[in-house]
Image 1 (spheres, protein in one colour):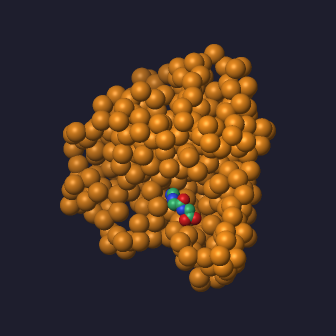
Image 2 (tube, protein in one colour; image 1 turned 90 degrees about the horizontal axis):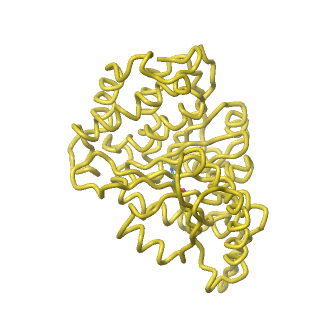
Image 3 (cartoon, protein in one colour; image 1 turned 45 degrees about the vertical axis):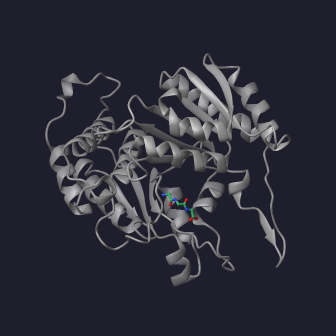
Length: 352
Ligand code: GGG
């Protein structure tokens, strides 16, 4: 039996509902996991003065993997506040944000989409290096050759291990010649070492193509803010941000989260779609080597998408708990027998 520890951080808004749903699912499909709770977010800052308390960081560092719900940083400036998401990525050196998008089994979904956005997670505009006085504000956009090569290598490795054919470098080097120019050059240098097709696209063209013909993409590698925006554009082809999951990965730690934010407009109403967080949970289980419960969960998500119940973001009337109940029922049904799994899929002592 595995004794992995998973840290659960609800964060703000619907993060509480979707992480509670994930906890229920984890307890059912991987009962041997040790689940540890921790707090972070703007609510935590308001309550205790720190958005990312030291004890939370310690629990994340001690865990084998972390699941984060959603964080809602205020749009206004608040003295002493920093986004805990940005801090977690920086402190733990979670340099890659990986966001897969696939055609969901939903009527009317864009067909044949199967892409992954690999986003540099530690520098660039999203790193939040800003100064401001009353009349002028600046953001420092740092792009280094080392970080650009590292993220491109990560994209190349991901393409290789997932059997993908092409990596598209997305940038804006026709205007941002220094920063995007360096990213573009370093990404090409790193990807030269891989046996994959490499092409490139200007970010505005990539946004249009992602909206119009998302099936044309395979792996995208890009800088921090571009990746953040493009993954929301791509999420439309994956059934919406209520379905898309991501991982922030470093060399020895990983924090999984839904792509969606805290959705304060529906928080506390019991109608948040938990499926993006549960898809992130399946990715987390896979990361821990628990391939069977991960596959069960993925299959159960697809089944619930196909037959319902659906929350209002998908046009249904179900609540979060209805979706979780249906999902647990699907996950409990036998998907494949153990002997049908290849030795690679079957892990010694794996939870069922
Ligand atoms: N689960 C992803 C999420 O929370 N997205 C919103 C986000 O990234 N917020 C950053 C922040 O508000 O600090």
